[in-house]
Image (tube, rainbow, N blue to C red; front, side):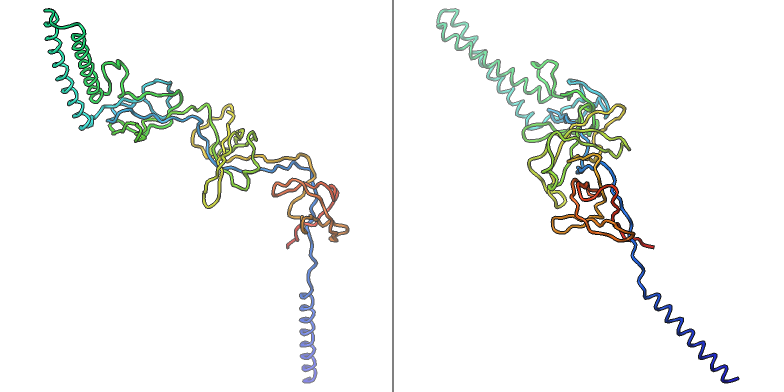
Length: 362
């Protein structure tokens, strides 16, 4: 009985050992590699570049005051339509103390000179009446009087301009009135009633009272990378996609390419500008961010394959064509236009070819 148990134990060990060897052997055997099969198709291939930018009006004007002071009244708000000459705001002048003092002094000085000239002319009138002054000398006194009167009037007008923003000679024209210089839509009114503003002059840009733009003439302004700018030409069509307009695509025409690039985020970028064609039923607002697809080249209904199945050896391109199930033959092909995902095949294979793709995974 004891010998039987020993024999059974030895047999069990041998069976386990043999099974382990079989398992390890099977596990060590490599599984056959199976590849996906890719077939060529007919397709349109478009090569394009993308420019990022925004939608802006072609004509946008900042209205600025011609005098410094306090905004007393604002007559428009964003979204209003205005015509050229429409009153936008009025300004209450706060005279500059130094200029006011100088103007007052100039009036006093001019009045003294005018009074003196008037007295001299009165004396000359008496002498001329008695025949004691020749006509030429009398005319000199008369001219002096008229000049001094003109200086006094000019000094008084200058004082009134400093105090009220308009002279008597200007009539209804007042520097305290800010009027639109163009027709269009009010985009922004960055000031409020009661705020101080500065006049626009040769040394100061001045405060902006309102921004007016022609919203019927919109353009796309964007940038492209230096690697793509050499492929662009004025007149190229653009497909402009605006995030705020969902699926609406606007058409545009490239009309400007900057001759000089600028550094942006460590790369050289070139500015471009494109005219936008209005689309019925679509409202375009200034400042929309947008991307523009610029078509560089296009071929239609050509034999195309995924670029992932193409390998290169020097300047030659190859694909692997199935000659038997999971058996492939390397074959040279001539390629054409590529969009980065699919590439045109000019020769080397036809539509019936079955090409080696990616390795299948469980």
